[in-house]
Length: 135
Image (cartoon, rainbow, N blue to C red; front, side, top):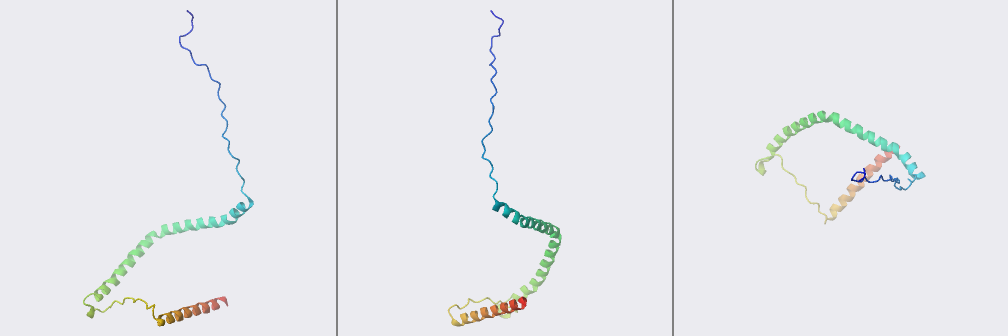
């Protein structure tokens, strides 16, 4: 017999060259896209800066807001207790009578005339204020 081993090793394979994946060339942004990006980027930056300042301010104000909250809650309870006591009891002897809003009488002409007058007066006030500011 021969001196060859009983098993055969596989023959070395030539290494395959990997081709890069075909990608589409990137399109350049047009003039108008770059124009609007450059135009609005300062406003976007200012927005994020103001947002950060707001969050830092609220984070710093949290203990102060908590103290103010507890103070206002205490004042509210101090105010609410006598109001509740004065409003309790039989309705004839209550000092604080509840006044519920009535349904506006849409069917009456008087309602619409008053509404028109209120709107007219409000517009006149705004016009007078606008005239004062414009001078």
